[in-house]
Image 1 (tube, rainbow, N blue to C red):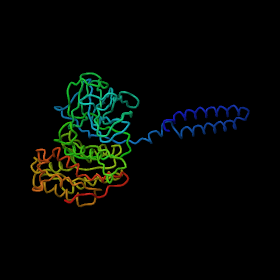
Image 2: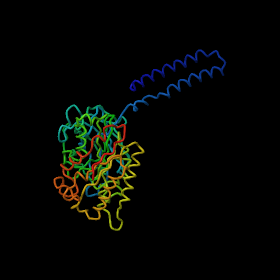
Image 3: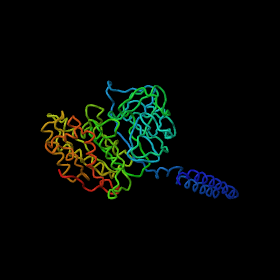
Image 4: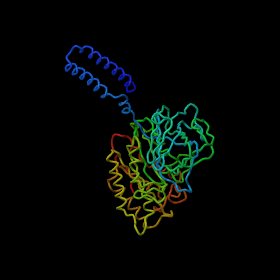
Length: 455
């Protein structure tokens, strides 16, 4: 119906013009004041009819967009690690959580200091490596144009295109960057091989002429589909980012959760619509303060609006962050339990103002890691006790309980330890996802019930 509005309004416009002309002819013999009154009334009626239903004004109200994939931008990288592209095409690989029949992307220059020009962009299903599956390649536009210049500090959304995207599928997003482009807005640890072409616009090439590969996501921060279901945004640090998981296998704990949500068949776990999972973890990220390394991103409190509230379809927020605040706490200015609690309360309050349910997660053990100390372990235990025992989060997931060594609860279970005593391995990340009660997301119409395992 909304697509017929422009034609209907064009017809109405022509009809009203003829109506006004008829009034003009029929009033020629009237005295001038009365003639002006009738003509003015006719034109006023036409103006009201037209402006009350502007062409296309209602089309967007029937759209329901949900992020199927996302990452959190950070930067700029130090000069030693800065990627520079020179008249090249990027082919970036991302993994969906839910499917849809229409798609659009979000490209970010939010960390940039100069305009970012995208000369062309395309999207398709990935066949393997950098190849695009035949018949799935779609050209993307931005406001009807095939190129776009993004101002410093801003993102841009592409226009939607028709493309049948299955859940849990890999997409290839191609961006042509004319000229010399420093990658200032990036997600540094993609744990995914991405591709850089030889010089030229190869966005439409099914097989990319690859010059080199990169393990980061430059500029691309979101893929959205036309789905009415809710999105779960996971705000976190390196453990959510998937540090030390196997590259190119999508074995971060949010990936495992997305698989569970798609594969569950138990009618008791039924969903109004299967939720999307959007990973907003950044390696080294903190709750309260920004790390010295710009690739670790701004603090969770600072990036909340961009990385949580701006996510289409967000209905649930899972918070697993704070271990880097604890691990980097200095003797001169120590982070306290009250500091961390105040930060969590801010996230909860700001999410609740937008109707978002907030799920707190306990902090994992880290004895043996370089940042460990007995006093920091005491603070971690105090934080976890607050998360478990206070009624401020809408629900609690006890990751500490499921990942700790029963024989020594201050350290990771050896079977789940990646080797650095801080980050789980693939099996540990899977165990974390299996600990999440899927019933928390059963209905987007009400807040999750309190769900937590005993400490």
